[in-house]
Image 1 (cartoon, rainbow, N blue to C red):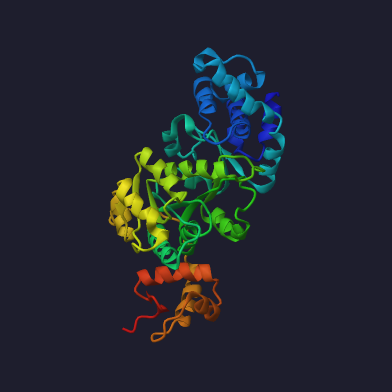
Image 2: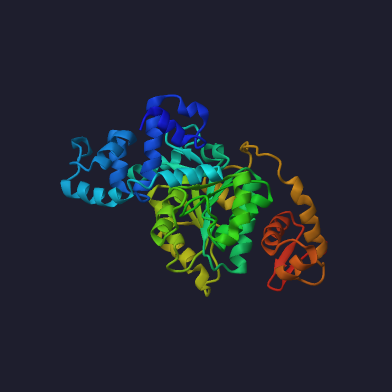
Length: 394
């Protein structure tokens, strides 16, 4: 394909100034195609691109010839890799068109918005990222904290997550998670509620909300942060891609905190990646009788995780003092004032009320009410006990 053809293929997926140099354009297009050819974390693809450059590595992969000497792979390893890549050699046009249609951006190493933390993954690092939202968030100076945990979260887990995410995001941290049900969603909702920024890492293409029930949540994240994936648009999330997605979550963050997780939870996979990358790792303890917290206790015991009971513990974990100057975000909290007032109006000083009742009285969705209650509790304007939420009497 000619340079003009490559530019046309990338039109709308990159900034105009990134499509001027012919060699850079070829490299960008090659990385876009590699995101189609190779599954996330493909070490041989990563090695070939690191040794040859994306464009030359792509040419070698599409030619189907012997392994280039500089790659230093056995013929068997190269042949098996070709067997994985060749069936997808002609599948690149539709993903690029679909990405253009939904306004996604292609970010590659060397771009100002490329998150350098991902380079710690070595040959397992993403070859490119597909992004919807504010790409500068990816390479910003703000401390980044991954909050992950069980999909089948308890009310305790959701409440603790909202408190942690809300406090950290309000003070400038970037909240990283996977947009799944349960703990992930609670973390993202709390960061949005306080006008903070977050990054959602998807296991499928960014053009489609997964789970579908989180379409509004992901739309909010793309306005205040970024929704990203290393797989191209049109790619379905699979179990393998969810597991590989976890390494990206861990690499993007300065610390990973597991709030609630079962004994064999996928969150332990994220914790393992964080530990192997030398990232700070913490876990929130729960009742010793709760199966939903067994994985957290396992992290504290077997992974040398730090016990997290508050946002201050997280700040200490990453060496972030309250006195440190914090990055400024656009003032998006003003729009939440009325909702917070409605939540307070729905609370009684005498009778504790459950989330469903508070949502009914306030007209605020239950998930948003949960996030706002966590923030109001931090401010001392709401309190909770096993019977529900209420306003403090004094």
